[in-house]
Image (cartoon, rainbow, N blue to C red; front, top):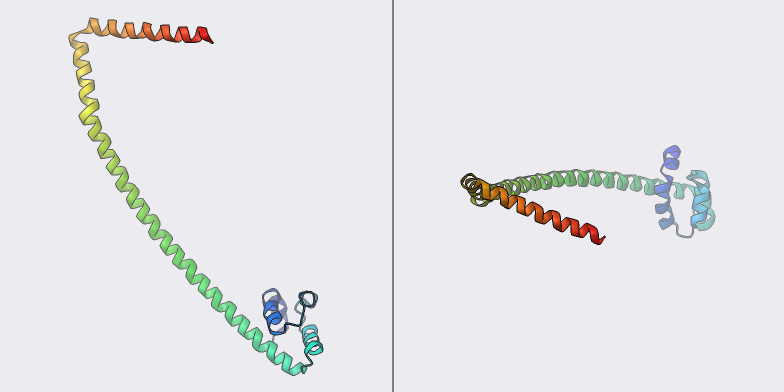
Length: 157
């Protein structure tokens, strides 16, 4: 087992040590800080196992830990790619639907304009052309009425 790598991976690996040798406390594992010699001595003292057997078990456990870490890393990478693909596909569907709704809304607005607004404007223009004096007096009357209402409301305050 490579001691520097073992020390570098200690934070992740110490949980596997704690499960395998459950008589070792978290404080003891914290104090060891990945020092292989101290770990072997601690296990030997607590369990009475031979150093060579402990080192062999640690090596096997560490190898299994690294394999599991590698597998999890690959799985996470695969999941990330899958999420990206699904997100992109979902975004594309949303864009398509939004475009469809936008086009539909534009058509409905155009239809409303053609059926209601444009004819009303055309009739208003025709009325003003035929009856200009009445239209101006009507607008003047509405202006005076609105002015009076605003004046009364401002006096109450």
